[in-house]
Amino acid sequence: MQPVNKAALFSALKACDIAKIIVRFDGYGDSGQIEEVTAFLADDQECALPDELVELQKIQFGEEAQLAVRTSLTEAIEAIAYAYLASTHSGWENNEGAFGQFLFDVSAGTVTLDYNERYETSENFSHEF
Image 1 (cartoon, rainbow, N blue to C red):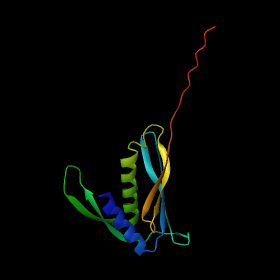
Image 2: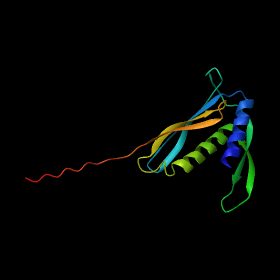
Image 3: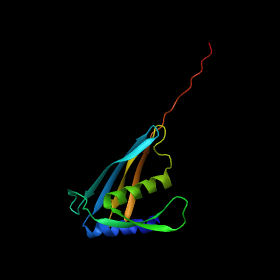
Image 4: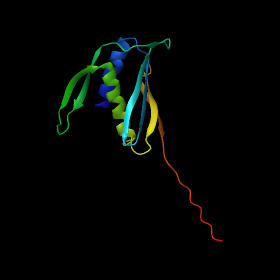
């Protein structure tokens, strides 16, 4: 479903003259969320996302059939970003967590994930005198 949903979202963004979207996320301690969704026009001017709706395909838990759901552009962007995070870095929000951003490049038709994983290290030193 991801390619179908991505195509539907990019078509809607293109129709609204949106050139790119940046989605910032952060998570740790078993909790994570999208912090910010920012839209830009072709001249790199920041703009508000319009109140347009886009149709995404979803599968309900325990079901096999796809369900068409109309949702706002912001909700569609977040749903696709969360799906990419789950498929590439499941559990990204656990323990020390992770942070990063997605770049939705409408003209190129690509979504790029810049992902930073936090981790805790320890070093052991043993001395016998």
